[in-house]
Image (tube, rainbow, N blue to C red; front, side, top):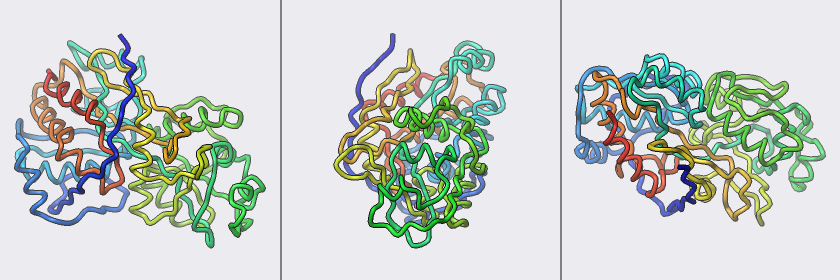
Length: 374
């Protein structure tokens, strides 16, 4: 039976957990923004129950790379017997590696497709793969345009920019949204993901839903827009935007803030343009519905929300794992690590990195599901 319950996400501020120590995570491409109190790390680590030993391999979403940095450092400080290796290869690649039996779990910024669930039954011998929402947050539209520090765009204009229908920054459509800005005639360099990505899937779902007259491409993990330039991973887009005047691209907020990039405010039809912030993303995620079946907890997001201060370009990153039939050699360590990430300490550690913790109603179900993994 499909569950369709509206999620009410708490928007109260949460304390930031900062960490120090050696990073065991194998990753690439983005700035490491961690740092702070070792005592806080020790306190969080003391609450972790360590199970299993050896190597725990996972890959997928680069959107959650900075969250994984924090989680891995804290977990490793408590569970030295487990070597966790998470590679931010992109959601598409992560799912494929999981379906090939190469990893214990995968990270994906979009829920599994029906054909992927069907394929998972070969890996999950007595069950199938399920989606566990673990972290949420805004997809920021980052840009670099000399002399312009405040920029407003809407869904229609973004669709035209990323489909090469608007190619100069002083285009009339952009001027109309920014009457007080001194917009130059600089050529727009629109960057998109070259790898299959859940971030792309969510971004194009937003364009297709909020600007259907101008974005005719079906939402997908693979980029389908015309023109533009491809970059590998969120870190690749952030680096290219930072290095090129006139550039624009879509990245998770943590990549924008970590690289000191300006971000677009969205004209959603609300009274005021909406900034990409964790709190504003939380207001949009509050409109999500649980649509997963059985133990699957996949969500349906509302990309057309016009609620005040609700930033609609959001994504939820899922950890994908077998409900039954997980590999015996990695099951205990997988459950131990996911119990920590879903714990109060694990979720509180996300705020400083630009992520939104998962609502209590859902994260409670995630914890219960992790306990039941076999």
